[in-house]
Length: 157
Image 1: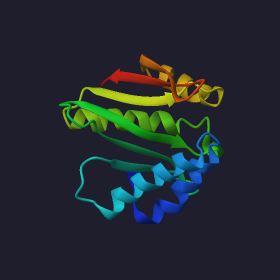
Image 2: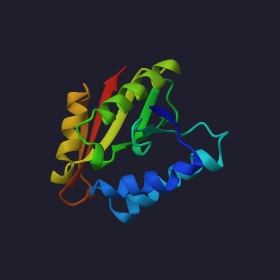
Image 3: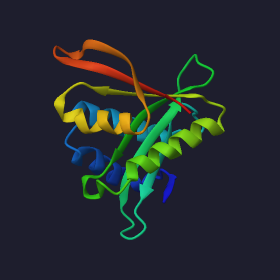
């Protein structure tokens, strides 16, 4: 079940992000900052956060943060999408991506952007985006650090 992120989910989401093995401490801090904004400032309209709660275990198995891209009229950024490794292969990320598409369409959006790294540890992430119909819009060489490019994916929804 996909539902709005709640304060009670905080520790579970932070653990989920750390469990993927892809994110360093700075990235985990950024995720934490964004999820805290969603709870502490519910009136803001920049970030919308959701969790996938497993029906059987009632565990937070995935999460999503999406929001409108500033200074655009229909572009949205997928800031975070992740599923817990314990739930890999169960289609949770795909369900969250479809939810993001519906969320964007419901707000008259038309373009969903996702950014990721070129590092080998992100092979699974890049394959996921390609499987979901995203295409590479641009690559910025050495963006994160030498040898670590930014890859921008996009999908019309």
